[in-house]
Length: 325
Image 1 (cartoon, rainbow, N blue to C red):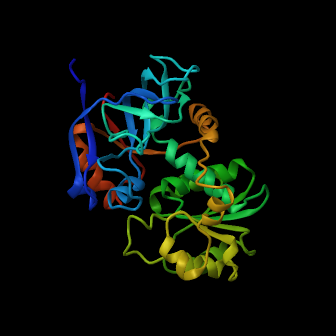
Image 2: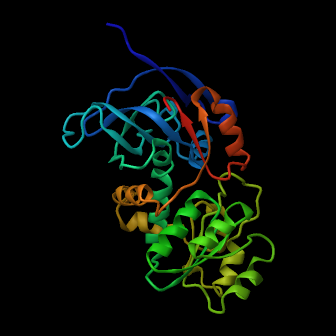
Image 3: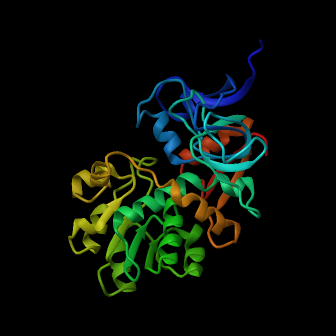
């Protein structure tokens, strides 16, 4: 019996992504019970991919990258009844139980949603991790309708998504962002100012009151040399660290005492991901009411260019690989 092979990007040691990642032949994975296998049409890349390859969360090696997938079902695991071979789906790749993930010709998903009519594979592959992360942190932040939220790093994809989610929930949104997305954020209805030096004064000039919630979405795990924004956010919060929560700046949180969500992981009995919202935001995206902007797409063979752009912080939107685009 001949083993079917595919192309896949993975790493067998921890280190800088450009050093440890390789595109090699791998066995096409078969889905375990409760999983589905897909032929990957599009795979979104995330800062988390580079954090994992550096050893942020140790796991069995080899390990694949590419957590966001959209494709066509090729096989279903035991117990899967609501989806069939040939259906178009999108969702998170299982990178824990298989040696490859979404940056491959084929991938295994542990959660999936049907691809809505009107949503392309590329746009669907931009959604899963961004939507889940933004929804989870807004939930942890405790944002309520009518409150004011400051989202620092609204030009990141998690921040960009969080702005839209907060506006949809009826919140007043102040966003800090660079020039790439500032006008788009304003068009959505957010009050926008630049991040960086002088941010405290600029935010106070925009709004008189102290924001109820402050969410830091800056990609601290990509740029460890960058100055933490958390001291400024605590200042804007009037010294109330309980109002501030950060997505990625764990070191800054340790120094300032702001929240990271760790308390919720403990109270929820583990890391509970919010995949229940993925279908909702997928439908909104298909209707043109929600967007995670795609900056560029790449053939799988051109993956190194995508990695270099992302690691350097020059993506300015989602980067998507197209194994079968």
